[in-house]
Amino acid sequence: MPTVFEAVRNEFGPELPLLHDGHHRMTPIQAATLGKALEPYDLFWLEDCTPAENQDAFRLVRQHTTTPLAVGEVFNTVFDFQTLIREQLIDYVRAASTHFGGISPLKKVMDYAAQYQIKSGFHGPTDVSPVGLAAQTHLGLAIHNFGIQEYMEPSEKTNTVFEQSMTFADGYLHPGEKPGLGVELNEEAAASFPYQQAYLPYNRLADGTVHDW
Ligand SMILES: [Mg+2]
Image 1 (cartoon, protein in one colour):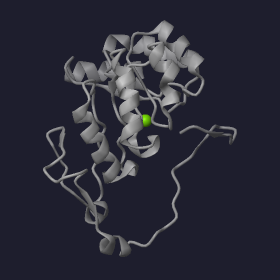
Image 2: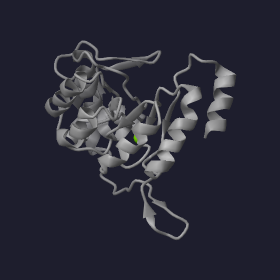
Image 3: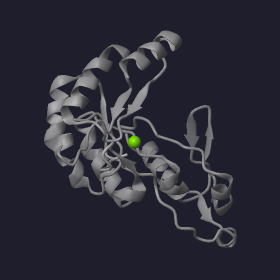
Image 4: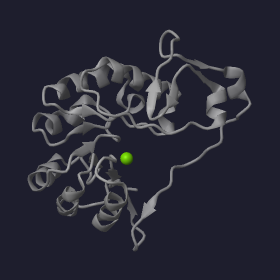
């Protein structure tokens, strides 16, 4: 990975923000080694470098690198962030309103994070739904420690079912002018897309063991 980032920096210069997602795949010492090796390339953040359920692991990573760390897309409560924030082991909160209990708990964790200059970087793939993304966008506008908002373009089907006032242009989300979250569920449109069971991809090690992906 360091050779990839070296090539990207050489090609695009120092201004382009670069983010890397480790998807919980590294051991703590591997994560620390990578963070240290990436320091010359000035990452915006290194995300989920190692599973954060074991908060001691982040003490180890933090002691070894100044690469900014982002964590929390699999977290479900404010208490998951308690140690990571109090000990300033992370730089960005990656929680999503959809998985975190909504706007109120997300606001609580961001107010706590603000005391330590830790910013938001809410999880924003399409599975948080346009409702979740709208909630996070509004919250991002309301807090003083907004950092960045992840965004993934919804499919045409999704946009048919969820009528949104939110817009995305030139890297910026705008919540639009409609009241509330600005998202209306079109139940008639939803009925034309019957439920189909589906699974997220899963990852196996060479010996077949199921592993974080
Ligand atoms: Mg991620």
